[in-house]
Image: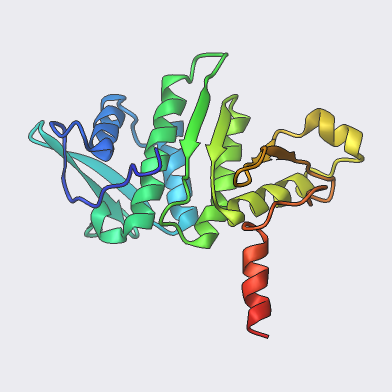
Length: 221
């Protein structure tokens, strides 16, 4: 869900209305250990986003958890996840959930579709663009994803990814492209944005999306 992040130092198991608390509890019960692929997935993207170098989910007397973030290594004094701001909390929430899904369906050939709502909330633009890379890694493992987003940076990064696939022609692209992007204009019929081999879209977004930044820049001239 879009509003999964909560800025707390301690996540209490008894708080059934706290999505993050329930998420951390469920993740801990999966016994994902350092060195496991799912653990390394979190570490790798933590480093890429600049959140930290390592983490530890620390149980507190069987009633709650704390999430410690290490800037350098486990020998240093950690920061609590709540100290890092809502963007980092949102990112870690997403990484915990995705790694848990990876573990849950690791041995299954037919994997489910993952639904994600506005993953970009509270995130810096550079982090929003990296979401496309995170989702591509998940997709490459056999999952399908349905992502609802308002992030121009996420969409543009998907265009860069398509261009990097270097399809020979439009026919090859349409047979092999792993993405579909649909735009939902206000009070109109949704339509599919069609990728070209260079990563650009063959058609245009309706007003109020890509054009906003350009219009504001034009007003400063």
